[in-house]
Length: 199
Image (cartoon, rainbow, N blue to C red; front, side, top):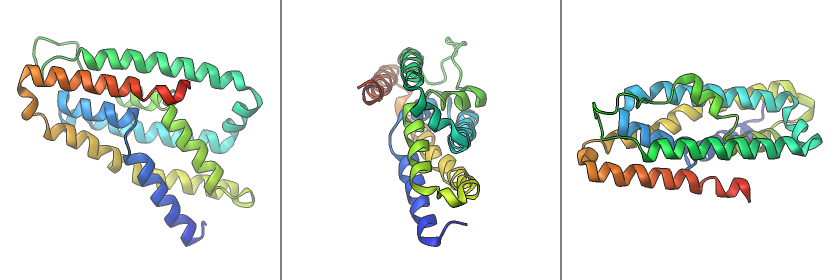
């Protein structure tokens, strides 16, 4: 079991990294606006489940594979950037709030959100940092599980605040011109979040 001071520090780390802006939170805000909070719940849960899976994989040694084979990091960067550019395009071209004309528009599914964590640069930084900082070599298995559990409890409510914020903006964004500007702004922010990854 982690010492209490370490556990409190981990909770703080999980909260700060989960609630600060990043690709997940930008997409959740846009989804909350365009589809409402309830329809965004699978997206939120997928983020939580996907990130826990990523944490466990990194804790089991996947992080060391990146150190041994740097080309894997380059492949991940390219795949992540390409996917995020595609998502930004989809967000920028989302229709009006509750528009019936854009029948193809839908929120991200649980599985899509879970899989997205594997190409999300912020998720990788969070997972690698958490494992490097909070896992003690002599207690590796227990500490990896503790880190995953803490993020499991902290992450979904944290990212959910962004979906809730988007949902609260729905009424104000019923104006087609406003929602268009909002969606383009969210797409630009998502693209901007790629820059640190490719530098």
